[in-house]
Length: 68
Length: 417
Ligand SMILES: Cc1ncc(COP(=O)(O)O)c(C=O)c1O
Image 1 (cartoon, helix red, strand yellow):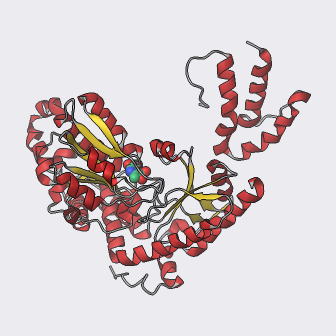
Image 2 (tube, chains in turn red, cyan):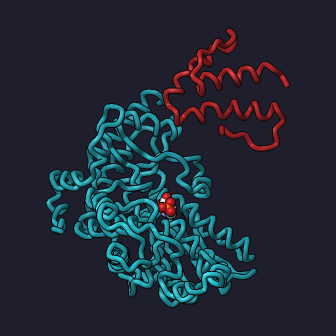
Image 3 (tube, each protein chain N blue to C red):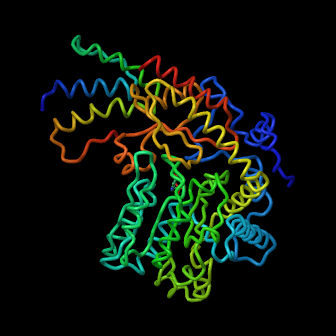
């Protein structure tokens, strides 16, 4: 599996779910814009679902992606 | 209890203020703004009278029902059965044997689907529902169909959100065994012409179940006048507690139905309970019921009965009409559900913001609305929307609440519009 998207997924997830300081690569720096979503716990799922989805398909998982 | 029948008729703010004062939860701020609760179709708030009834029961009378000879048990049984009688009178059932306490609308429908449906249906039989059903009036029937080989037929709706009655007439056939229909839609507000629907079904000897989850808090329900065969509702949508609801069924139908929970083995092993199972309504109330819930429902019925429905209707209609007026010329807003006969529900979408964003932003203005598919995914598909935002009004809502909603929408518009 390509480590690059997986690392991004992990960083994005940590930013919203673990509220950790995230040092994105310069190319992905814009993702910090979405850090504010963590102020809306009900919406974290919406923001992370596409990341779960891409991660899931890159892993070739058979089950549908979920945020659980 | 003193009558509040005139409360609304004065149609003054003070009348509504008096009602609002009964609901302690309304006296709070959310994100620094006064709470504006517009999610009544999901669940209504509870008046102090209901809260007190539940509290008093646990404080003074708590015991199990139908089991003890001691004083508390007698009191508990008495209050529980009184609550049943209040429900009977409230919906004008012919007998309290026709009032089964359940966990709510969902369990009531499941009871009928399993007990009535499963014991009678066979391959080739048909059950009619409609496009605007809540999942709780779809999935139980799908389960029954899987178990029996019966099939589900669906009455289509118009773009405005009204049933296609001609299609319904065509669907009714010699194979139809039951019509199960929502009385008033939670997602659209549509009030269905249930009297006509029941008449047409009865002309072919087909019984009708009505899902009254929404209707019960907004209009008088007289099961004998409607002549419906089953009527299901939840207490929590009509100012009562969660976890308690009602299945009304005509006695001769209920009598002929097998128990829903427990089953044959249990009757055999606990043989001295056999006679209890044989009788209505206990036959369908296996296990210790939600006693406090039933008592709370009784108190909720007392509360609504002390108001008067024509006044409630007038008030809620005026709030809905005002909401419709404000919605009509609001930029990018489309009302979902434009039936002529509606309960006070305003479902809508904005062409520049997802309902979830609308919900989050108005919440920050203190306004509670529901966003999502409203447990009616087939309906959302039919209307080609993934979700809607829904404001649903109750007796304590005001024109100012509608204004607060639209102030919230202004914030949505300034961010997304
Ligand atoms: C029309 C309708 N039917 C059924 C239900 C299910 O009610 P409950 O969840 O209380 O069983 C609801 C409430 O969500 C409803 O609005």
